[in-house]
Length: 212
Image (cartoon, one colour):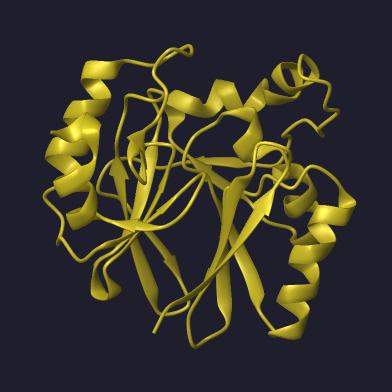
């Protein structure tokens, strides 16, 4: 049985997810916590629930999604997992964030490569990596088929899709990723995006104006 908790971090309201199973081992997806106060919210939840953070999982390398990677890595001595196509985004995120007035810690922790159809393991749980380029070239989603859960970063939103006007973005590629890799999942699959509310694959298939 997998459980999850969503935190909204930084001024761009990035959805960071803690995901854990009965062993209490947990992974932290897209830690966008901008400062120690935001990290403290996560720390409090981890301590109150006796969770054991073991890995940082990144859906892509944009600065708002990796803003707290180094803080989290140092707090629990963790490594981060990212698709190699977005490694440079993550490593230069502190420079990009400075343009918007933030002073984030550079990502200096170890970054481990993931690829399409690879598996992330923690506790007794296995998440499947789905490579969904389009928002960036290294965007991935994390799928837990057993409970029909999909952590999709900025690939798919409730009623929308990820931006493609930023470096590495490609509209046709993003639509192809969603159509062929996500809409083929069970329609009851719960979608946890990188911003905004949860939705389902079936609801987006039926109502999302970008997918009609």
